[in-house]
Length: 170
Image (cartoon, rainbow, N blue to C red; front, side, top):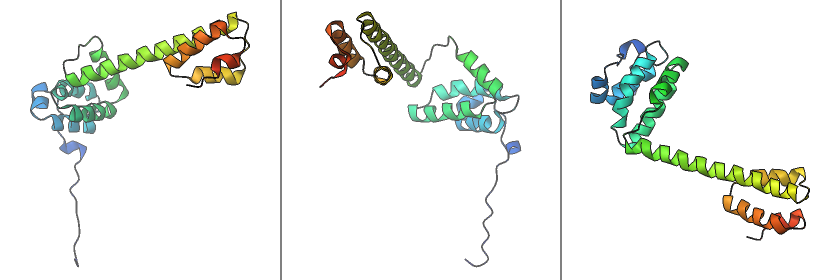
């Protein structure tokens, strides 16, 4: 269109209210998140986060996940530490948070099981006097399947050579 000039409105930080009232954040969680995005780097970041965090918990999983991420990434380092300190010992109320805490615990258990199995396998091989070259050690350490590591441990107990342990057709 001839002569058309687009002038999009610009929302400046000064136009975004600082939301520090938890009741306001619950009424308008998007405004609370926007407040954190605009003012989270200021000295008010921790106060904003403490007001907005409870409001996010009542939202559906998809929005809550997005808003938590936006909130956390909008804060200055001191506010992030304050938010993390607020969360220590906190018992999550939302199914959203409980699901991700449980997922993290499960992943941690599997990682711990894998690390334990790697140590056990290397110990059995060492006790049996079976040399483990660097490439084989890297392969063992890189293995993330706990069941495969357990099979390798079982084989290592009676194996005559490393190839008898790691040559796994399954």
